[in-house]
Length: 427
Image 1 (cartoon, rainbow, N blue to C red):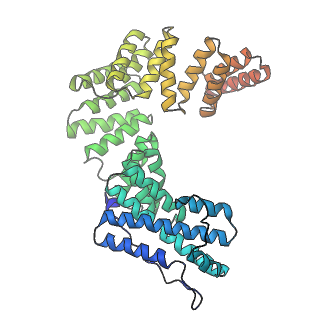
Image 2: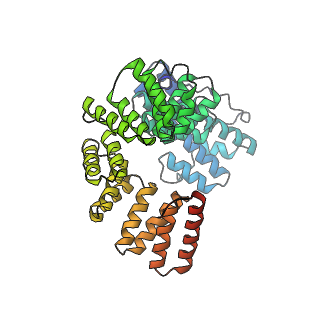
Image 3: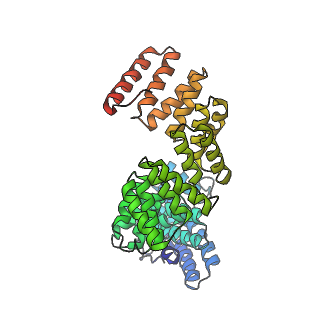
């Protein structure tokens, strides 16, 4: 990745201090220079060690500046970042020098030290990324951004680090900023599209890939585009895309899964089942095939077959939260709520903002007579999905069970407005 080759060096301008006065930043600047000398000689371990020592000195200077300006709380935070438990008892030479500076000189010193610290954190982050320690790299880039958000290539480096750490939702924002600064960078645009795809922002991913000149020639890009179309509800366009993919690049289990999902979205369950079973013949443990079959069987009322397919999915892919939630739904419909509850709780442990799981858990607990817990789950579901009428209906029922009549009436009214708006069916 280009970000992993990016190494910046810090060139500090001369500090304008009173004639004859000691330079408070002299030791810090020497430490930065030593780190960069190691960097230029490709001595990465030594460079990292020297940068970390320089960072301590930089935060000590920032803390001393805060103390000189009466900012006690900020000084304590700076000393904490320097790994010093509190304000040092004896004033250092740097602190004595800072105390002799006027406000304009202190502001200039703060600006220079902050800029140098930001670049030091950036280089430390890049060194971590080169060692494939991407989460640590992202943390260091965040520190750099807190000091200087406009640092060149920072947003790009931060986005790449989060992307490689598979924290795609966190990668999308800095990659978006980087793309805004370099709109012609096709590789950056594709990386952002993949970040949005993995963060389940499918429409954004599809928009970024729609006009990609390499899309049709690159099977992975064409597949990603088709997947984004399927997941954003554009099944007809997706089927055209996958037809091109099949014609140009041949058959695959993964492709047949997404073809099956696209057919299912359009209500063509016969074609969907055919594609999904073909996918499983090509690759018995292909992801999402059994889960998609389970959803189809659920919609057809074939609950035993749905359960079998979903359990097969979870045996091969136990981390599939959507399959776990769907299995809980099937079990609830089979009057096996006690088996559904641990599945739902495990889903919410991993993904607390899963509105459908909160709704189903609240609905089950209400039916079991645990109205207080039901209210807790259903209120959370309503915050996450305020336009879902069925959540409002169940929440109204739960309030009613607790004797909270006014709140129950309010939720019944919201429920009715949403049903009228959508012309939906019964809860």
